[in-house]
Length: 136
Image 1 (tube, one colour):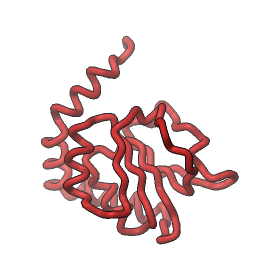
Image 2 (cartoon, one colour):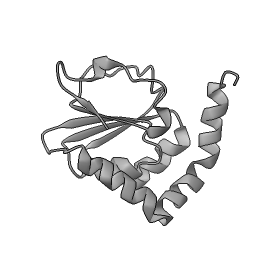
Image 3 (cartoon, helix red, strand yellow):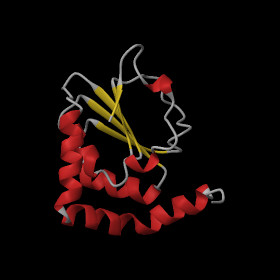
Image 4 (cartoon, one colour):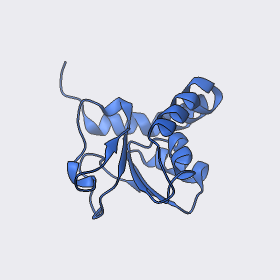
C-alpha cells in the first residue's frame, strides 16, 4: 500500500464531518462504545485529559462531564467546528492541529484518549505526566 497523502485525508474528513456526526448521533452502538471507553478510563473531576483525534466531539462531551479540563485536538477544521457547537462546555478547549505534532501544548496529562483509527502511530509520550498516565 502506498503512502497516504495527509492533505487528502484532512479534506476527506472536512467533507464528511457532518455525515459522520449525524451517523454517530443516530446509531446507539457508537455512543455506547464511547460511553464504555469513558467508564473504563475511571476519570475524575481533578484530572485533565488530552484527546487526539476528537472528531466531532461525541466522546469529548462525555469526557468533559467527568473531568476538570479537556484539550481536544483534530486536524479537520470542519470536525472542530461541529464539535465546538455540539460540546459547548467551558472546560473544553478545541485545537485544530496535526495530532502527531501538536504545537503549543506545554502541560502533561494523566489521561490521553487516542482515536482508535490512529492506533498504528503512537502519540508523543511527553504529553503524559511523569511516571503516570494511561491511554484509552
